[in-house]
Image (cartoon, rainbow over all chains, first blue to last red; front, side, top):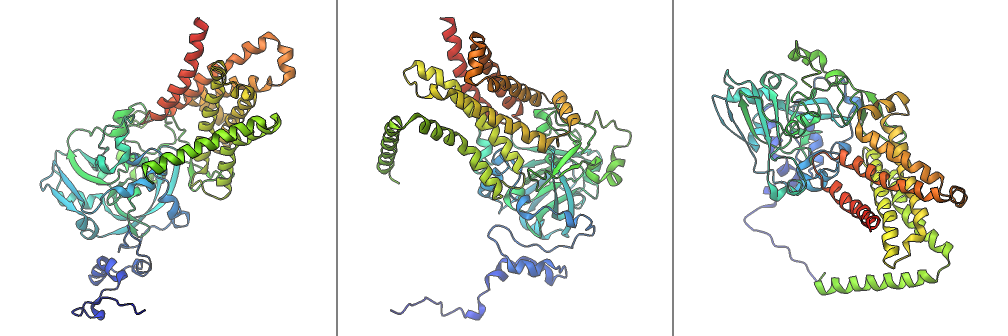
Length: 321
Length: 215
């Protein structure tokens, strides 16, 4: 029996875009614009369903490169309570979150309030890679190669007013797509809110990530856009941001509101201030194993003290934890 | 699967279970207790198998801590269920109370060893610090300490030697249950669901005893 395949006579086969090229049109366009990167070659090979390769400037500081946490660990062990409180819940359930279309509303005390859409975030800024330590308040840590741009680049575009002192961030809250927010016994008041002092937010290390390991963020890591503040505990690095406001008053952040004795507004990594639940003097650097737990000493400001300690000059960090 | 099909497969499963129980009653006692012991050890076997084949993710200790802790609580519920069931005409479980109790102690001890290995690195100073500063660690450790004399006096000889005070000593299972549940409650951070479910089951089993003592 002969098989017949339907072909549209008006389209020649030479005109059909090969799938990898179609999927990667974004960086092809960008590379044409002159922002070429070694990432293109690898991106052509792997066009996975949900993440897309990005074009970015390679990290300048590569001192942590040999300590990178494997991609699988970074994307299978997450805290994203909107999808459940177990570490593997986000990888299992976050796929249900719609990330395209996406927009981030930027407002509050700014001269140019407005919105950023997914395309603006992925192509409207000069993307670069940053290899950062990531320290969770639960005493585990990772080293992650993020892709994104400095938070200050974003804020400057909207021109914060002089009376602005803080920046507030909000995560998407969509009950229908986030099973964790539908829990009857949960006590977090959604949406998840985080905040920084404006000078912290303008610090060159404060980073907006749109990708990791060279590709757009997987859902469980806070797709499509998240904050990364490497000298603070991980819960400050809010995921899947939909709103950014410059404010005069200190934002009411989620964990601090829930348990003020346990979580401070600053939440700087500090081995000398213990959390009531976890000793902060050590961390398990993942991947960890039972026989080799990989416990290492935690560094003040997660190893970024040289660069950020000035922000807190004159403050009592035992009180303002 | 259709509703009808699902109902039929449930009925089939129930029938299978009934036949298995009947066959079990014919089996010699040693075979029955071996079977029950293996059944109770299967969660542990599964965890160890997954650990060996690297199926527990980047932080296996965390999964093992959670697993051993939760199965210990479930086992505790089973132990506490034995008496109410026996009083209601189901003596089956009652015969295996000691074995179940010892298995609970095994899970709790593994839980503690894991904590020492992974979280405090066998440092006495750090362990002391954890006990002092973190109430849930103190409460959990106290629960283990409470179970320790029960495990040590579980032999027939100890039971005979202790006479009437053996029964009194073994009432320590009740404060141990309360401590174990407090340990879980204190670990809850943003969702109380799990602590509430365990609280309802364990609380119910303890309440049954309080009611009986009052009569």
